[in-house]
Length: 619
Image: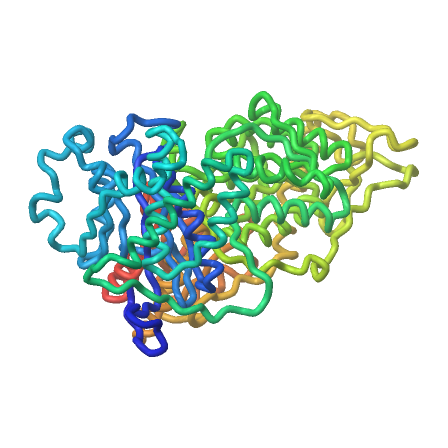
């Protein structure tokens, strides 16, 4: 929590440049809803922000255990916010298990808000405490605010008619009201939202509102050692904003991309964490020419999308790593028949089921290399929730212009996190309309565009364009089945060159922060953008010679990337895996790059990247 200036702050409030708040409790305590409401109120207050929902995969871990702790983190401020923050300035612990799991992330001197009503012998034992941490010096390093939130919530909603169990469910709103007071947030949008959400159960809405108001009132009237905080509005580009998650931005980008290609979109998918939210969002977009289909398994999902592309629509499918593995044979079919197909991979920690709600970047090998035979495809990666919109449009362009599958890599952090998003004017985007083949003279399905090498796309049922395609190798000159060795050599090389040609249509790689040559380049991809960008900027402000390069086009790589990297004495590649992009860069450019690798299910912290940069510059 960076203290800036006391000028122009409301009376009795301490002005802050930025703050990190983390709500933590049991999975049934409503921490994600609480964090989401605080995010909305913070956005309306004019702060820049980034969030990090962090929750267990189990639908219901044993109540009160450390396995069931659910948390929501938000970093907000009056400056440009690029990550969800490092150490927390304020931790809300709704039970002993939340305190046990999350306390290590609270900075010394940070504010700790505890619901003492949940610190009973039973819950302390479940959390693994031998003694009550509230009764010894275990919390002496922090500002501790102890409130019996459970009891005060029961008192606030006693006239609602709710059962004790339902009444206690309102304690997240009581807590939210208190934190609203702490940071001077307006309760009105939350009140309106509760009344809309529980329109058919107004007694529940009013109970939650009563709890919200009671928590806020306690903050206003209590005598504590701190006055509450004020975070000024951020200076951001004028325009119409909304908060957006990666899943939402992906859905919007795919729909807009299909409309720019001027064809309908078909989305075939099978539920899997954390990719399912994309299906949820697209299923509400029928009015934009989007058809969604929940298949019986991953193979059917991918094959249904391929069938839609064969029929003249843009086929899209999504999953996470294990699901993409099941789709692999179908993706090989799409490569062989040379049809557009977008495969969205919202990466999670693995292998196998792994840690489904935790983030990782471990599917880069799977995307670039993970198929049978010599079968290259295009791979793109989004860097942030808002960036998913742009990358989705790029995926649509490449898939339709080159008649090829395109991997679009997101991850659990990007998919679930949210940030302010300047709503774009889609009328300013350039169209890339699909031109279906219509000439019957000399037609066969593997006629090719001489520049891109994309094959002709003919709609089935068009008179004179009757044709068949399939997984068996086709003759280059006729499209008929062919086992000729020379033909397979030529078709393999052609498919390879077609993907290589994509590099001619993508921008040269630029430098995000810093110079185009120097002592050290930090090369990132995907969701490491925020911590890498901030770390590099912080150290450049200290005068260190370091630059940041962030790669969107993972395969094929930008044409100038090798020359650009050769201008630096050292290259550092931070990744949430054991060094996958690092391997690709070493193989392609024979550079002595070094990895910074984290595989903990958690995103990088800025401090971790800064420490690695200092080590490299000093070694």
